[in-house]
Image 1 (cartoon, rainbow, N blue to C red):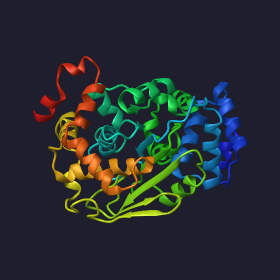
Image 2 (image 1 turned 180 degrees about the horizontal axis):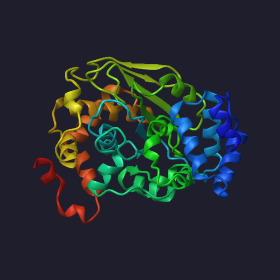
Image 3 (image 1 turned 180 degrees about the vertical axis):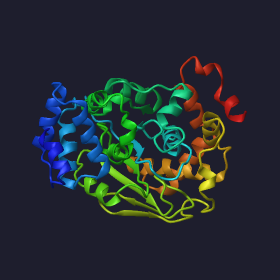
Image 4 (image 1 turned 45 degrees about the vertical axis):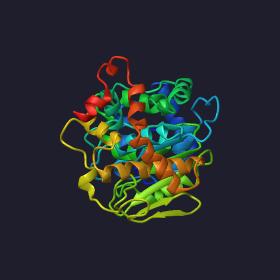
Length: 344
């Protein structure tokens, strides 16, 4: 077995970059068998490695990525760690609202792990595809102001690792992958808004944020434990350069409970479209607009939170967010107008 696995199992501090490089080289050469791969993932899922080891792991991913052709000015990625209360797809809805309000958004996400329907599951049901390359993503940004990035943004060695452990599913290791997931996607964006649930190790994520130099990272937390901003909660955004406090009721009515943003038992697509249409209740609308406003401010395009909230509310109320869904859907799905679905 390689040095990485031995170091992890022994609780060794700072498993170095060189060991990670060696492990991935052996994996790509077919020198890692299923047992070693499962043992590695099990070790990572059982105990989150120390800061130095995580830095070495992420650096080993970064050096294997193909370089992006150019930087996407003012573009923002929104992603969460998962693990919090089950809500509707708040970050995905916020991405549509922010983009409809003029903020370039590149959204990353996953299939359901702790939630009922993950962002990828929802997009499939809406008939909206994921991008397959940087060029594809740029085209979607130019056309819609919004792109949903596909698997190409993630380290290819993780795909190789997933194939090596078959028939075991990577889902069993979802907690670790969700925790470090916000740092796995290689996107040339200006900023990243990351929801951090109470189940995620905030202190460790703040340490990792300090190592990232190519984009600003905002870590969003609250006293309810959800991995998104909530208008009825006390929120804190850790920016790396300080903290932004958004207490209950600031920029929102302050009313509501988790029940108002919980994932429902009905059709998730119809419920999601109701949110974008502004017909799912004031609390849902305020929650989505608060997260969309965070993207606007993080992008550098808007200085004022009040203005960012107003722009987001306008995108919902004038139908721009819902229209953006319609424009991004596949031609086959456009046969059923979203307004009819949302009101039905």
